[in-house]
Length: 228
Image (cartoon, rainbow, N blue to C red; front, side, top):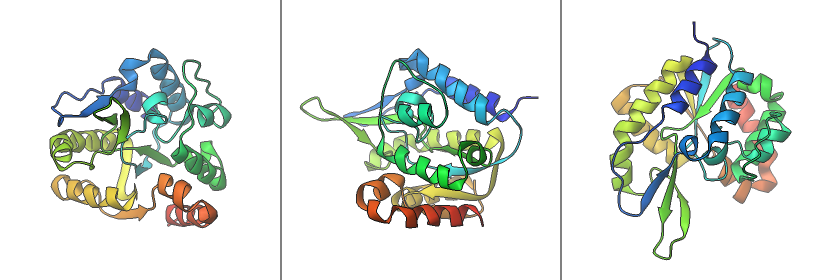
C-alpha cells in the first residue's frame, strides 16, 4: 500500500502543464529544470509523510521562484529546508519572504514534525509562473493576475486539486492563504465541489512585508484556526 510520500512524490514527478498561456507568461517546472530539486523534494516528503494519516489541506497561490520554485517544497526556501528540515540543497541558495513567516508559525505550532504530521501545503497551480516584461525582466506572477491566464489554467487547476485530495486529504475544511486567492478558490470549488468549508487566512507574504510588527498576532490567528 502506498503511503502519502509515495503519492506526493509521484504527483510531483509527473507534473507537466501542457496547455496554452497568454503572451508574456511562462511556466517554470523546477522538477524538470534542476535534478537536485527532485532529490530534496523526495527527501522532504519521505521524512514527513511516510504514513497514511489524512492531512488537512492548506492552499497557497502558486510557487514563488525562490521558494518551491527551487526546492519543490511549498513555502520552503533553501535556508529553511536546511536549518529546520535538515535537508541541504547544494545547487541553489535562496531566501523567500513567505518561507520566513511559515516557519516561524511552524515553530510556534510545535515544530516541523508536528505540523507536517497534520497538514499538507500546496497550490491550485503547483508550478511557478513568471511574467516576462518588454526589457527581459522576469517577475513572479500569480495564477489570477490576468483574466485570460486564469481561464486557461482553470481545467488544469481543478485536475490538480483533485489529485492533491486523492493523495489522502481531509476535505471537510480547507485553509486558504490570501483573500484574493480565496475568491478564485471559491470559483473553482463551485465548479469542482471539492471542499465543505473554507477558512481564509492572510497570505504569509502580505504579513511579512506589510504587517511584520504584528507578526505574532497573525501567528496566533493561524494557530487558533488550525486548532478548531
